[in-house]
Length: 147
Image 1 (cartoon, helix red, strand yellow):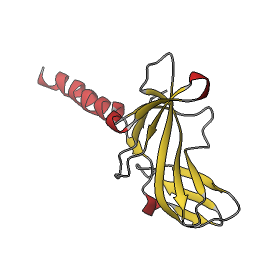
Image 2: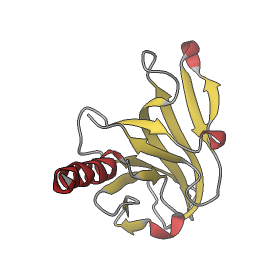
Image 3: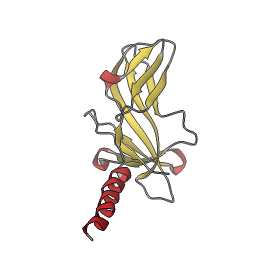
Image 4: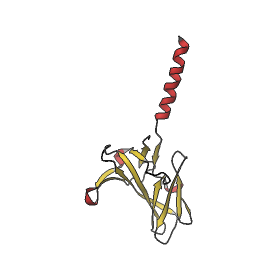
């Protein structure tokens, strides 16, 4: 009888780990690399990559985080949707928009984490979005929604 509960215990332990989502966030400035105007940074879990290109003719190293931008799904509540971009300023005053895993199409659905750092705003035509402008490491956080 004692042995029959052991497989159940292992399945519960492993299932819990599989359900846990990695917390991702806009990359720290120090992790962004500039290679001929193409900017890359590893994701927090190290398995994927952020990528972007400078806006403007001049490029330079990233010096400052500007903001993260998230568009919520209307049907699934305000904390689930698509992370549009994380924007940074370069030493030459250009802007760089980094995209989270741009190779995935359609965009990956995410859930906001550390919601106190995301401010709800309204853009043109009444479109709601959330913006995170916190400069603290890991503040503009989110997690992928399992498909």
